[in-house]
Image 1 (spheres, helix red, strand yellow):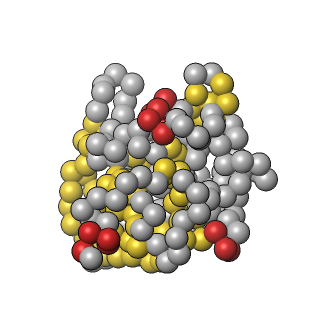
Image 2 (cartoon, one colour):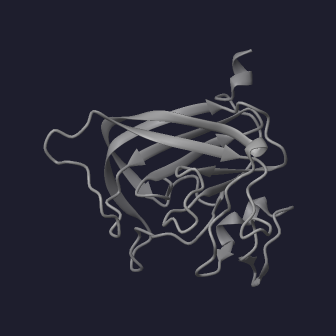
Length: 202
C-alpha cells in the first residue's frame, strides 16, 4: 500500500496545488509503541490530525533536506523528483522543525472508520515522496514485500485552505511535535492535477 509513518500506513494518490489525495490505515502494531487499541469493544473510528506545510519546515534551523543524500552526495530537491526512492537519510537525523504559521496550508482532523483492510508494503506510491527520518520498515530483509492487516482504513481528498508556496509540501500526523518524536513526516513534491483534483469537477 504505502509507507509506515506513525503506527499507521499512508499511500499517496496525488498531490497538486489544489489538494492532497491519499489512503490511511491503522494500526500497524508498531513494535516500539506502548499504546494498543482495546481488543474488547474497540472504538468505531479513530480521529487523526493532519497538518500540511509549504514550503516544508526547516530542520534544525537549516534546509529541510539537510542530512539527506543521493548517490552519496547532499540531496538537493530541484530536478530529482524522479529518484526519490534512492534518497537516503543519515541515522539520527533531526526531525523537521515546527512550521511558521503562515506556511500552514492545511490543519484538520479526519475520521478513520473501523474497516478491516489488508495492505501491502511497498505500495504503488513507492518513490513518489520521501520520509523526513528513517522509520521502522515492516518488510523483513529476506523478502521483497509483506502484507499486513489494519482495522481502520479510509481514502481521502483534502483541499488546501491556502495555495502551497513552492514545489513541495510536508505532511505530519503529529503536527511536527515534539522535536524528539518517534515518527516520520512526509515530504511530497507537488505534481499534476488528476481526475480526483477538485478542479476536475468544475
